[in-house]
Image 1 (tube, helix red, strand yellow):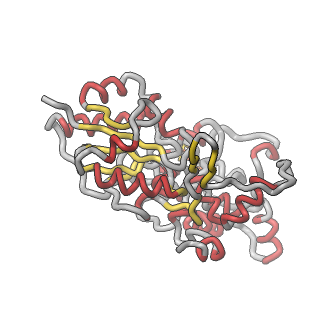
Image 2: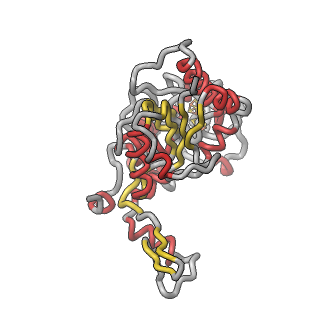
Image 3: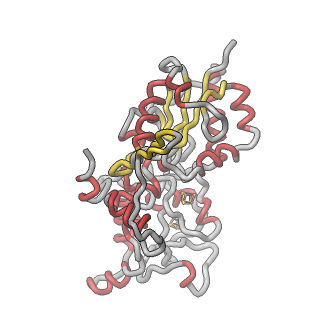
Length: 329
Ligand code: SF4
Ligand code: SF4
């Protein structure tokens, strides 16, 4: 009997999600034993034309990682949606835009200017990448960059969400176990739209650090602290920790080793906008009354947009700055 087909695709992303899947070790062998791996560009050579030739809905499940930044990303999102019964937004870029989504603070022209004519680039002729290049051997094409980064569910319908930058390998194994159990008739899929491989509370709820009343009179970087208390809440020690607004599921991996959570599991359940929730959380613990004193505390946050919306800007209520959005057709 033929096995159900599995696919994994990498759009605008760093590749970390692919590595995280491989980090599940022998689970990859179980995946291979239970599925026919039909398309996985990072692991095998299958051409786009071969996917286009597949019957619609012939892939049982596709894990799609990466944001939608280029025309090619968008084409593949629509193609894989058509070919997949179950389309999973896999990892922070596909779900929220992640670090690539911070580019939405700039227009496309600003990005090119910085990358190709910035202070660290020697480019006296102000060359820019071309989308078409005619060489003697033939025509080369480069997919155009779209005006803003979008998440997968801003482009096509998504069935399930697996958060994380990247998703924890232990949690990926849980998701793969679920898929394997479903194909063997031992489990049923959760309701459409569910978040898989994550918790239902916040990183703070998983964090073993002791908490008292949070009173913030100074925000510091970790290297500015004379010493770090190994058991007390990092936010109470004046470090910007995103635990209060971030979905659980990683077992508070960063605070466990003394590093503040930077929010990679995305918005906590029921939170519409992770950055707004984080701002509210910080504002509520600033222990100053006078505007100048409050400003001094907030001066400890040199990059507020990049701190509060590090992973979630593209899927936030803000989405992008107005000039970038205005470029969107
Ligand atoms: S703010 Fe950070 S350190 Fe404090 S309890 Fe939450 S996750 Fe832990
Ligand atoms: S603690 Fe925060 S940043 Fe670290 S892995 Fe967990 S969700 Fe991501």
